[in-house]
Image: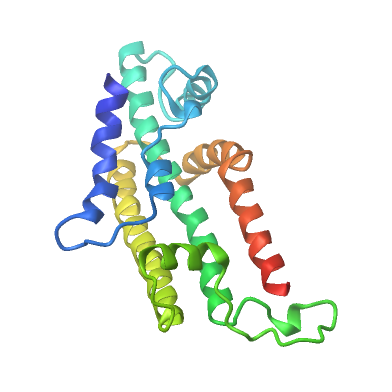
Length: 217
């Protein structure tokens, strides 16, 4: 119940982007990912709890009451969840920036290409994922390039806007947490990175590889 309340409060940052002055919605896949509290950050996860105890041992007295330790761990969990959301946003930014580069003819940089290619690498080619989204909402192909560009720019802008919201929230929590340091943040980030690399990060890397492959084809 406590985690659901925490999730609800933190998800307000993402849902607020779809109402009022910000009618643009990020893709459902991204929204779904942001609304998840991964298992490795839950209260029941023993490994994360042990990691937080090690972090606390560097900033609190060993004789501190267990109740206070529990409160400190909960605060660190809030920070960890915000870091997770920031890293999710940054991972999707990487994907959407790749969409943008492909669609604007900037995907392949000749000076960085090891082999000499016999065809142009400056052609603007929108990945099939983007074209599918556009065609599903608009059957008019006459302005396809403009519509694709608008879609990708809107998503990139919205991702950047949400990233700033999460970073602001993170700064508030970090500044209010006595003894919090960048080294502690790096420990938490490393934990998240190890788990992201085995799931979301690998998935996005595969999608990016397909964008390059399809471009060459």
